[in-house]
Image (cartoon, rainbow, N blue to C red; front, side, top):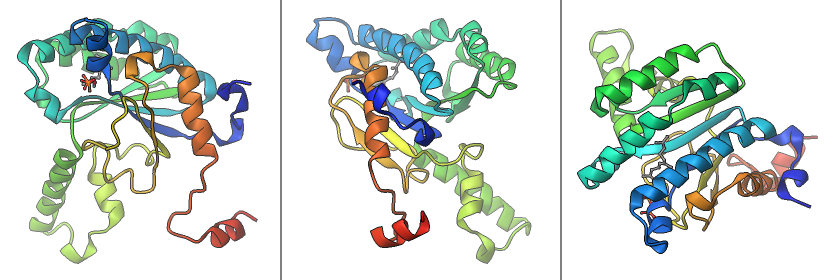
Length: 248
Ligand code: FPP
């Protein structure tokens, strides 16, 4: 029986975040340029979008390009931008009723890429089947710093008092304020860390680490991650007994 067949259809996570890692190593092991790994990674992404829709995930947040990725060689950065430009097919989003969202410091992304991205965001904003959240030039520390700045300005101009700042207010000041926190975060490629991704939002997220390089990841692997998620007890700081009581 496949993992896809074993899934409990009533307990599919609403929001799954993915750190797509391992493109470079996948390419290197095959004697290819790193960009070939990213290109294969895009193919995987396309398949998973359709797969995500099929199993009922509503929000998929992908770490597409981190703030730190700007430090990669110019050629690789350029190739990633080109790949994004070439593969952002509005038609595919429309065909699959998928809404595109972008989070991150997009002021740094070249304007020829952002024009296409913004166009796609605008033309898909009425769709609600799957929400694809692309983290572009994103890092949690950038996002939290930006939120602190926003809230500080409100305190400075007397709109709110410092004592009134609460967790909700901070969540609302983050770029992910349109979606509930992810229930599941997957990282491929064998590393066990979050690399500055959704640090505030993942306070209670179940983490799943896969050794598979992103270009080898597929729907069955995604279903395996969801299956493990479904078999973990989410306690939110309560005891196991309290959780049992609360679901009786
Ligand atoms: C990490 O692999 C992956 C990235 C930096 C980019 C992720 C991007 C894609 C999957 C494709 C781009 C998507 C679009 C829509 C353009 P790595 O290069 O860090 O791999 P390594 O750890 O093996 O070196």
